[in-house]
Image 1 (cartoon, rainbow, N blue to C red):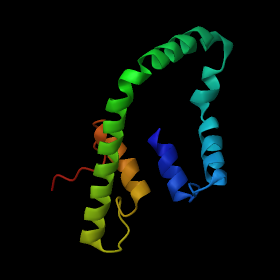
Image 2: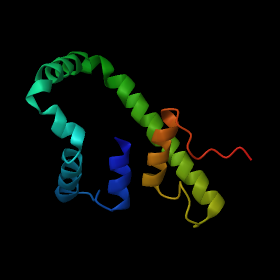
Image 3: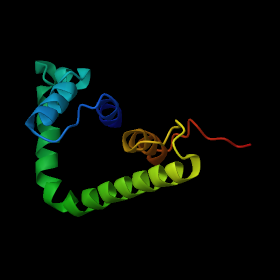
Image 4: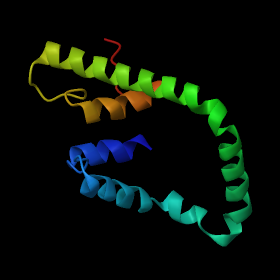
Length: 117
């Protein structure tokens, strides 16, 4: 999920324009999960999930929008706070893409870089 965005940001793939988005789609399509879902033995389950997403899509627009806004706001605040405090030193939150990657970890409850000292 978010590791693709982190990787794309760090490799400077996400440029504005058709070429950048084409490269992002290529990166996602290389994912093993996407390829495995296209296998015939998963066709029934994929169809059930697809129907469920299409049916509930209109009801989930506002919650998905709010979650995305919260994610971007928290990422921006981490980046801002890190750049104000460390002023140019390389750290986990010095760019938006790195902050987005670590914020995704924090939002799902994993705390790999917690310092209790």
